[in-house]
Length: 599
Image (tube, rainbow, N blue to C red; front, top):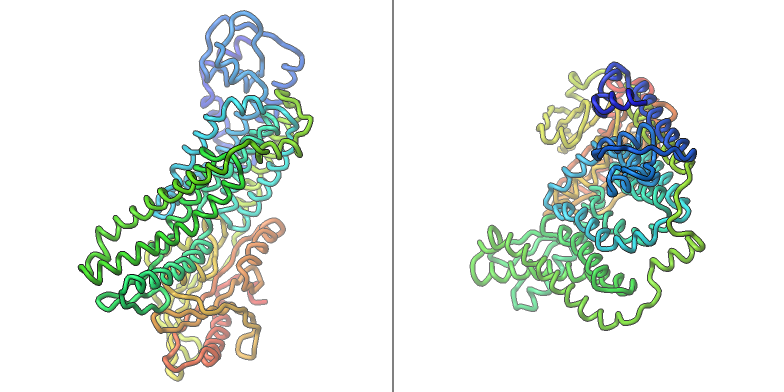
């Protein structure tokens, strides 16, 4: 025993895990990790149940105590100990379950955490850097109450852990990165509840709600919300300008005041103020209000306050451009007014909190008390989780690890011909290939692509064509519908529908009609996925999950065609022209896709 401990002390954790396994393949390495985790935890539980006491006549470092817990799981008897703080952290079963769970989750989600931090670097979500600090502050200030609410059945923790595993499976195979992020947060919360008892949910649900603001919403939700907010802000700004006696003409998100035309673009939609306003209203409500109905009212108030403040910013830019200098509508004043808008929002929300506190007298029954009453009635404080609780939790976490080792990383790649020699003539359409920039390719994440412009001399129309091919689709790189891209480019969506097959086109396509500055454009798109033609992005995700499990495949292509309409060309006439081209395009594509795509 002493010799083993000396070797452990000399080598360190990195030495043990770094030597002897470097030559193992992924499945073997995975099984080795599983055996160490589950076996080590089981060994700890068995020795603790047997009441083995060992007196250590030396002070141990935190790393040594952690290694001792991992390897033997002994608890310290009377006499010399590891030091009161270290003993309480590392040599109690709850802490072992939590620490091992966090180590597993850290390895499981490490790359996702890096990707998430990269999203925070964008201007719309720079506030996300503050969310972990807010969560930590709320937990720290509530630490005494958290200590009083330990114990209770861990059932809720296991339910949340299974839910996190399902989210991870769907997110990884369905190429939905947002679900992977949600899985990470639910898994962390579940690990806490399993290790320290389900009653903690009564105190942690609010910090968890705050933590959800670390996750940016999917791009298509962002763009749809930005579109709606642009139109609302433009309309409100028009009313405010008229109230200020400024002559104005508005067309969509374009505001013409004579001396200058103001375009309410995505950056001015107010979306980058809306999420921080929701976040700050939740934080203010937690710190200064007791009744949850008043907190809900404050959160609801933050939306109109933000939208009106943003419209006021657009109106002030119009007034200054009209009566002072058009240059004031951009540059320094434009950036400064954006900062000023959010200061105004915070001041108004602070005033709302001041007024609501007069109605916040009395205790009432809090949301935490209601949760505890209905879910944890009779639960005992301070109860220690049974040994099988930790083993079951480790088993679920190991299963979550297996998703990546045996499903995501083992997808089969199909043999096909590259688009290098894709024909430049499709029927009567004459084409020219256009190569995408490195930035666009990195955004798409494709393995192969064709991008070109085809022209019909008889119809005088151009068809801008993009075929994006993916050998495998993951949460960070997958085919997506063009809705978010086109709306993000300033186009306004007039209609969206699915067109059934016809004589010229033997498969369904999604149709989007867009307009911008008086111009119209028809977009047709479809997903060619392992022998299927899919027009729904959500159905495409479901097929990705199903085929990833059953077929071990996630290959697929996005076919996207946009055709601008002539000034006097109707949507129906333009779609007939596009049907002929899209039908011929798919026939040409079949030679460059796997064999089962021809079905």
